[in-house]
Image (cartoon, rainbow, N blue to C red; front, top):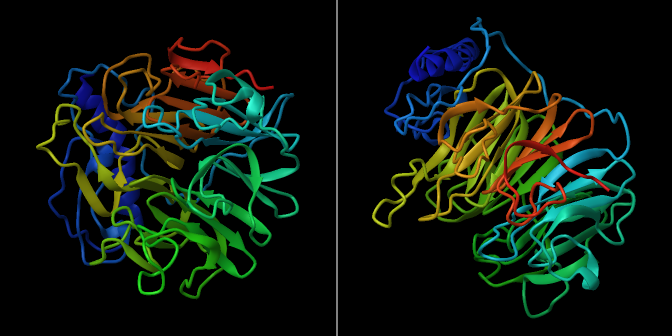
Length: 460
């Protein structure tokens, strides 16, 4: 079967699922085709399910031979409401959650990973240029391909990049970020975890220079306010806000999760989302750039949401949606071609229902993006940049449509992406990574040895 034929067969599922879920006729708008995650539509409706149709990646103009939908049966799509698969530890060492670190150097851009281990400790590996491995002064800022525990952390229950919350609600951060410690700057660098001066929290989420937390009275944020993520500009300037400040959010269901990039997203227990900050990636239409006023985003029934600086994606009812700033074509990385910006969530065509999705930032004039998603079956699919084998299909050819990752020994509960590497947390508690390994991102113990297929991380 031709590449175009396989792509059409693979995308049939998402089209049928969207058709079944949408009861009214679509208002079909002109969309920018090419990369599946890089279409752009606009609509006056507030419902993303009526915002457009699933967008096929189309034939690979670069000549890719990646398998867009291996052995995926074409079937009529029924409503889907499942979430990520649970992790059931089979043996020690075992990870129960997986995150990416934050970049400390312009070159590494967060090329590292951390895992929450079953014993309540945290292990990190990869780039260490800003202390984001949390190994203390002795280890300094050394990159490492061997995962090791972050010093001083115990009884951790929640992890976000290089911040963690323990069972008492105490929050800690390390590496580069807003630590509420330095009176002269919003962002400092710490090689060991620093306890944050905030009320007991259930979740702490951090961006490059902004931190937010879920506390008993709602959401509090602190740090740099250039994007209005800490306070409206009439009440606080663009400079740093060095004390945690309560965010005035619209009334509604309690919040269950928090995600911070260039914009902040607070996810309610009913699956709705409130957003504020840079525009894009607000996930809604706004005349303010940035928009410091929390308002409902144009997504609902959210199971998971991921943001990487100016680009965001979410899963809802088995369908992936993406929005924000996009570099869609590896041949257009020149100064005269600006990146695409999608104000509203756009559905992504996938071979089967997806329950979790990860994205990478749009780095202008550097390289295109990549997206990866966990399917309900536990399979992992990636699309976009694949110059270092980050898509996991055994090639280095750009993936214009989702390709299935080859070589995972079991179903995946979560997948995380950096620009140069990808890691998946299996339901068994094992972690596998693939892609480039310049900073030791694969966690295999061997630095600068890349892999086109998944390699097991040597957890401590």
